[in-house]
Image (tube, rainbow, N blue to C red):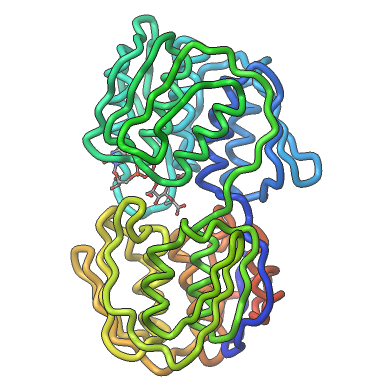
Amino acid sequence: MEGFFIVGGNRLEGEVEIDCAKNSLLPIIACSVLIDGEVELRDVPQYKDVLVMCEIIRHLGGKAFFKGNNLYIDCQSMDKDCLPNDLASSVRSSIFMLGPILGKMGKAKVAYPGGCDIGLRPIDLHLKGVRDFGAKVIEKNGYIYADGKNLEARDIVLSFPSVGATENLMMLALSIKGQSRIFNPAREPEIVDLQEFINSCGGKVMGGGGDMIVVDGGRKLHSTSFKAIPDRIETGTYIIATAMCGGKVKLNNVIPSHNNSLISKLSKSACKFEINNDSIVIERKSHLKSFGEVETAVYPGFPTDLQAQITALGAVSEGYSMVVENLFEARNKHIAELVKMGCDIRSKSGITIINGKPKIYGADLVAPDLRGGASLVLAGLCAEGYTTIENISLIDRGYYKFEKKLSQIGGDIKRLEIVKNKC
Ligand code: EPZ
């Protein structure tokens, strides 16, 4: 099967173009169900999760196709309201289809979502919000059945600022005439981007990024041409890669403020940053020392999607570091793989203590999930010897042309057929 073959030890030098954000594009593709006309999304990377969402759109009777780097979606011919298990269970973002399908078709039958194996990932906040809007929701035989006969514009309060639940409920509210308000929403930049997308189609959504989102529902939504924000997690991954391997890298097409928590953490250790309007230059100035401690939190706190990557950084930084994962109870499967490389890491109930080593060694590894897989790539790039990584389709879910971009800045990484070591 396909895998990455990495030879560690090279410094990283050069420039990287950051792609549009996976976690913006996925809800925007779902929202396209509600648009009366063609949606053009510019410069869309072919993340595996984006390709699955396009398959879902086509399954429902809509059109979704690439022309060059642009993705075109047109759901005017959509005629289905059922999302089967084989499609829904392969991505977390399938649950974002519940609101739009229910809003457009009046009812929905959606199988449970999949996604990275980083915890239970319940959908109770999604379903409670849909019920609070007046829908009848039954869970049976692995499917969610929703009936939208009695939908009404309402005030909805989220008990936790869930990113997906916020996006799902924003989209459901678009189909309900009147003003709905969502309190305690997620504040991630991707929420604001969904709001900007909706408003570019003639919608009227306000308050994204704050503590209350107001949706003026029942408006006709027309065609648009839109470009999603840069991927702040891809940006953070390359920042950490440069810190680990040493060197100087310029990241283009970024919104620096989206990475404030990481930049402030690393500028206190061994990295020097040059922050421009839409680019960041990061240079590893000196010997890597521990970054101290990091706790993951909702935005603008330290992102859970960079937790595995900064754990790998701690593993090669002198001294002790601590990483606390507060959002996903099982986002730790990368640790067992890092330990195979000689990393000294202990983890219990979300608290990880890392004793940084001057040298780690290449090994044969298996990517446990998207961001855990990325952390293994970073570790392989700065390890002594070679590293193989299997299961890289999980990494392809959220990094497009990862090995090509890393090779362009000096990383020795290839995508090859991996033949298991036979001893
Ligand atoms: C989104 O997942 C992202 N995925 C995740 O990125 C990201 O880690 C996460 O937000 C947090 O920022 C996409 O946008 C496609 P949540 P989501 O609902 O919406 C609990 C990546 O690597 N919760 O904000 O699933 C949940 O268990 C992926 O790109 C409930 O309890 O995240 C978790 O503890 C991984 N009930 C917390 O909330 C619910 O109904 C945050 O989850 C929903 C969530």
